[in-house]
Length: 303
Image 1 (cartoon, rainbow, N blue to C red):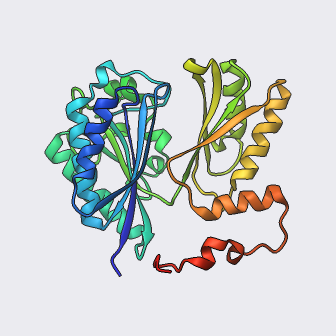
Image 2 (tube, one colour):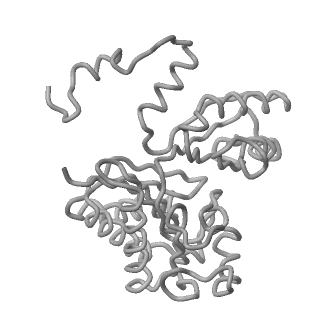
Image 3 (cartoon, one colour):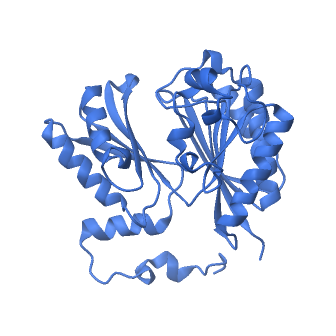
């Protein structure tokens, strides 16, 4: 059967509905691509769109979206709570069906080359596709964000893999990579104290000695007068969602605050949600075969 690749592109527009629809519209028009989900946030000023397709179609879709984002987004005027360095900030390729990580690394290189050469946007390879060990961590690639990278790009430590060794005048730079499925997961607190959110994020994130495969930052949601722990859970096979939730609850209690709610951004593998449900329900010897939908429908979707 044909290979199925997923891409979860993050682009730097979360406020202008017209621009968001135009950018995603380019993706929807790409033959062989299916858009599964997209969501945007005004505080983050960011949109996340998930789509799948065969390898060549996914490259074409990523390129088309990047080209339209470069046309409509001016990073000189962009501000938001989420770290960013470009109009199309992050382009990951993820193996879903009949595909390998090596396939996705190859796609990242092909897509990066096309974006760098045709759109003149500097591209840094990250994750499994990284050509420098330090760039396997996206946070290292994006360190300093758009404003900082303008000053350091072209130095030995900040030389792009493709495209010019200078920022695109309006679209900035892009990170293109290959990775496993991750879960974008946010936890909102009954608090408006940004300092508390940052302390909890530091306690949770791997880089500061927290949980393995967890990236976290503390943000202020101005429209809600609330703070948030915004996270990427890079490998829920190793660090499950419930473990992250429990550590956040414990750390929040230290500061006399509690969890208000949580949210998934984009899509999440079913097995991670089942694992979380089993933990909180304390289910013993649970099997996926006990889920009625798994019994009613075969894997190919036919009754």
